[in-house]
Length: 196
Image (cartoon, rainbow, N blue to C red; front, side, top):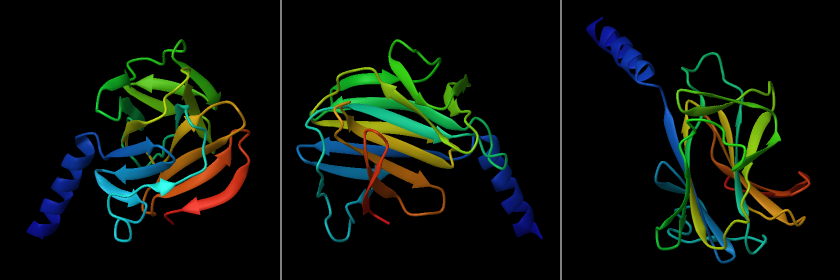
């Protein structure tokens, strides 16, 4: 009985402290990419290729996009994107947004709709992913770090170029493995799937 009571108290503390936070990092270098979730390499397979990059056909340079589905009633609020940081290959910060508001001079909403609450950008499109794209030409070699709070289905896109090239989305779905999907910039799926 005491163990059960302690587990309930621990769960209440976890949920009361803002719930789950996940950090997705996408390192795009040269013609490859490496993805980490909470500091652990997930793509490419860390056992087969520790510290390596997956070679991908993608535009040479490009900007970023982030997406999140609408909140899930069973998860604590706030739910969504907590922050976005882009660094160059030397670690110098190129861009940061902590989402005190959605600055439409920096971001373009490409799908769905958003709301900002408690410093978290939440998707409001029911049954679909809401996506924002940074209105910047982008970079060649960079690392993107996105902090999500209590998010169920998220997307992180790199090297968006607006040129009809390929766009790679890292999807992190709770309780499932991380995967990397390739889409053309017109949103057509190419069938490329890594990490499942």
